[in-house]
Amino acid sequence: MAFLTPSQVERARRLRRLDIGCEQRLWAQLRGRRLLALKFVRQLPVGSFVADFACRAAGLIVEVDGATHATDAEMAYDARRTAFLQSKGWRVLRVTNDDVVRHMEDVLEMIRRAAQP
Image (cartoon, rainbow, N blue to C red; front, side, top):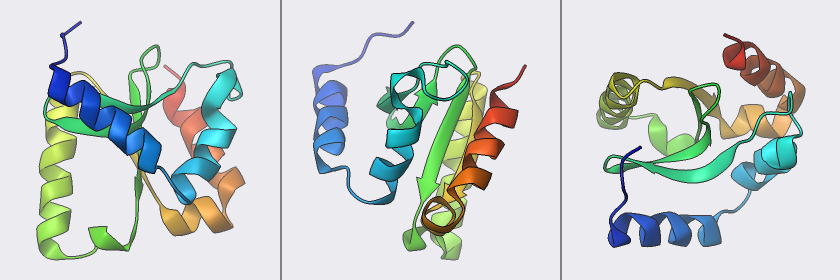
């Protein structure tokens, strides 16, 4: 396991404090081993990135993307980010804010499937 720098730890803590809306809704479903008894954490630093949610046991990261992920530049950044996370052994699942709000059960089913070996 890689050690985190103090600035990475502080950034993750700041993001957890600022967590609003859709991420909170999904966190309410994932925390406390509520999904398949898997332990998820939120705002996990991985390299220079911070993953929205991660389950170390399943090697799964769940990213919640809002409207700010729609431009070509943002999609290219997300692709680079995903490639980096995958190079570190993570599987990455991306869901939209809209899916979390309107289709929570579908999102949870996608996470269940992705968490299976």
